[in-house]
Image 1 (spheres, each protein chain N blue to C red):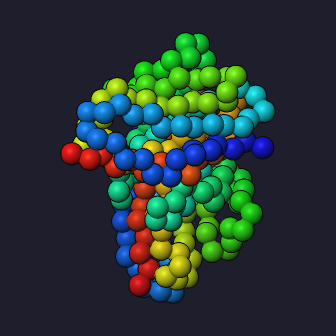
Image 2 (cartoon, rainbow over the protein chains, first blue to last red):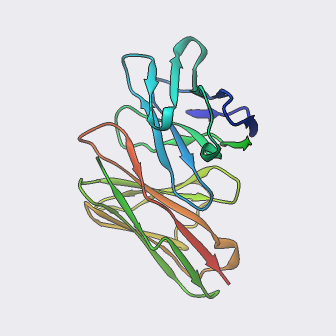
Length: 114
Length: 115
């Protein structure tokens, strides 16, 4: 069965510091991988996605993620965090074909210290 | 890119009444849409898969008689919370898959509060 694990429930970083949010997945085939951000009371905004090809994916707002098949990971990174990055981040996995749904990790809440 | 419009963005209703939430794919056809529920500080949990022209597929533990799903066209799916109770208060989000390109697009969500 497909599943997504985000080991860190809550992370606090200082503004300007680098950030890495971890995501591990379990999937029977090569999945689509996604990172979404959600601000309080808001919907989901897609940060980036991986389908195939280059394993280092660039997204919006200066985020990037690297797909590592050997580690079944898709960690999200940002070299310098801004206060506006404080939000909830969700990693998700979806099928490459068919109409199956996406499955989400539990989320990581990011707090940014001034 | 693909856009999914969800309406209303928030709604307050009295206990015992029904509430309908709409999910529209604006610039693509979606034969399949998904409805998620999110409790405060929790992740999104799939409630049901909405299939155009056929019955929805509900996840285990989701009451199909309480959460009525209708997917009457290729661009519209609706979720009706019937006889709502305070425990139904939650954030509901829909998503759709554009088969012309990979990926899923999410609506902006609906905050339902039952008083």
